[in-house]
Length: 183
Image (cartoon, rainbow, N blue to C red):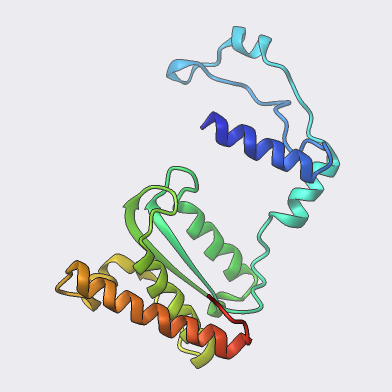
């Protein structure tokens, strides 16, 4: 967790040219049992957020919800890094922008950050391609259940073959719509 914090903080500070986008002035820290701890609060260094850093976060990281094209999210429900509650927050922001028809949210009932299988990614991506090309919006919900229904007798070979054929179809769709050549 500390390594993630250090790398993320250093990257953010590089992007803001050193303007700190966060502060703790006015924050009172608690000890065990949620009691304010005067000794801890007396010894904590207080840092003010720089306006440039706050503006950078507002410009580049605050979701506005004004989706110009279909957005299909895929999120693990027990993500320790990006809590699943962020999906509801995004839906609320998109709804406030009156762009809910452009948002579908799918999930995988699993612990871990982005802990999704390649087959689940391919299935979700193919749904996004279908939505973009054929205007068929996928339902929001649990991809794990959909995947189990689509492949009721999971064997390594049948899952691999169907995943390979779905991936081939998706690559063909990307090549035909974008003109890009993929390896």
